[in-house]
Image 1 (tube, rainbow, N blue to C red):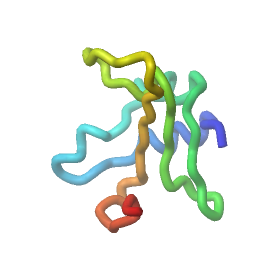
Image 2: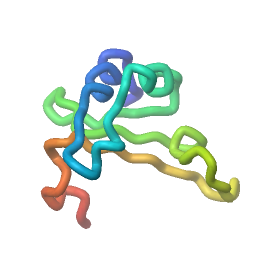
Image 3: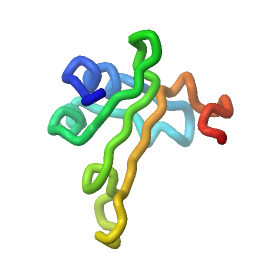
Length: 87
């Protein structure tokens, strides 16, 4: 479903362990998450992750081939490293 402001506020509070901490959100990320183009994945009302397509999925400073659609994904920190992204 499309990202709502309350979803974005929850996501920016996520904290990732160790070397993955560069994925930690901040209040500065709220505007981007709420600007449109972001979607949340929920199970029983609980956010499991989020995704986006196109420019929001691109990392600043890299050259992208506009013939392709970029996709960005994020998973709730307590769900990572459990094999949930496999197959």
